[in-house]
Image 1 (cartoon, one colour):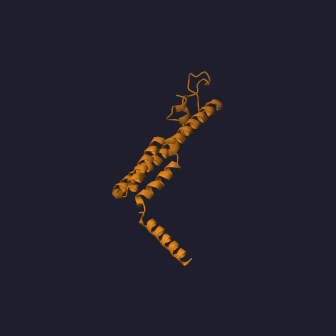
Image 2 (cartoon, one colour):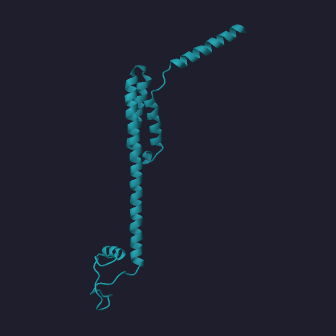
Length: 158
């Protein structure tokens, strides 16, 4: 029984020594992994998939270089590149999402303006010669109108 305990202690010590000999990944590789995961969870997955794929390929090259222990410097360089590509993919995804929101807001604004123009009676004095203008009413130029009337006159093409 005592011999069995010694054998177990030697095996445990050997296991710990084996774990201690495995090098830890460089901080650049850890940072690249985190950046890639952040990009993968962002809008880049949907809106910038090609850039995200490029970041994944760069990360895989860095992982392979790290696995080949003699290429630690190359692994660091490739990890740095992978991190920057992941950051770029995430940024492009955010930009595409913002552009999509901007387009939707502009469309909603245009629809609202169109609806308001259809519902609201014409504002400001009418131009002479218009069928709806009472005779003798002076015309208002955009320079003479208030800011609100000016925008309506411009939108109506006057």
